[in-house]
Length: 116
Length: 257
Length: 137
Image (cartoon, rainbow over all chains, first blue to last red; front, side, top):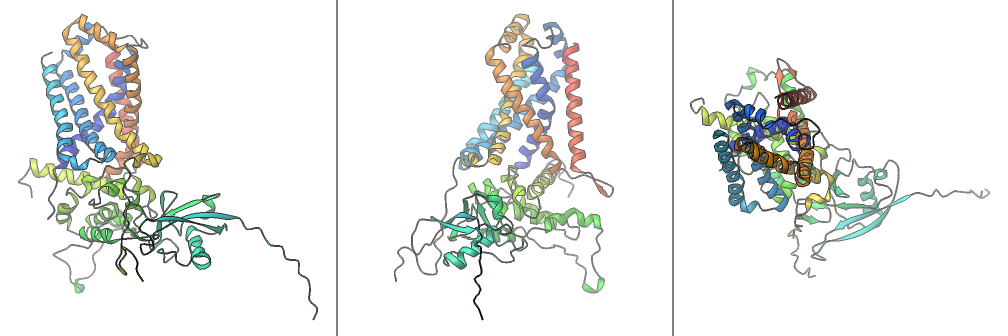
């Protein structure tokens, strides 16, 4: 008798994370990781960034972005390991490591963003 | 009657080599490759070449074929590692060759280019590919009426000719034979999206199981090789969205049933 | 006549093993694995972003140190590679999204190209908005 899988839970997070990451990561990465450090654009000062991140809503948005990105990675990487290394028989440990990492990271991000 | 000396010019017909997979279990337990040289005619397809080999060179070559025009789905094989219908692949597109002909990937080989189809047939049946309608109309009550838009919703998925090329192209099926597979899932969608059918809930147990859509990682090769443009990959992704909505609704609003 | 292991009229099926490096054999498969690998770039940046905000929270010295690391060759290289993968993720995601969503308005089906265009428009809008936020503060 086939049982309905609980994959939809993780797939929904994967999908949401995929959309959020697709929309926000390229420009944010380009700015904070390449353009500002290399001086292509004038980098924001510490004070202005501090003022920006002091808004709870901004930090909440960042939490949503990074957390969903992590769950997107977890689900996708889990299946990449199955497909690439053919270790589907190690289903339980792989899933635990992937989703566990994403959950741990979310907790870490939530705590560090809350205690700004 | 005088004998006229007719100067016949023998046309130089170009040729092409085929390296054909051979497996004859009664002769040897390991497979091998035989090389055949066939004429390279402009209008010949791979199936013509195979028929030429069987007729003129080696009658022991075994393979499946039937309609030779791309509607029966019998002649699927691998040509240079790509799953094709041999009746639809022109020899000249592979020139100068050689062309490597192998049986459909991801299936057990019974003999030469013939694969075992049992698993595929079982999966087709498993998804309940028939109209499920308990309150069916009797014949006297007349036909079910459908608008062209309603037909348009699922007609693409009716085009499947069960050629199994999609299963050969799917690396997931290759690694995990329990995966229900593209054609069976597209066939299920053909019925799910047909308004005469009310079997969505019933099929969801099978389709949304661990052997169903959740094995698929949207490689997309199944849709690439499909000779009938059924787009099974799209069918599966659409169903993932539907199954996910259904799952979340059942958890967040369990009273709505 | 003896046939060895083969029993007459009983199929002795040959089952080839699926190669571990199946994704090297065909470019379409390699492209698929590269697409899936983009998730690593996404995770990389998620971690960096949290550390970035952390550095801002800790004060000007910590932020200066972190900014120095961001300007290091290692960081620039990692970020450049990650940027390529992140853009590849966005590109493949928006191109594939219409396959999963078939939307109807009344009687007509919205063509996939329209959904794709809407996705790209949203991507442009969000990018411009975020650029504006970070360069005008």
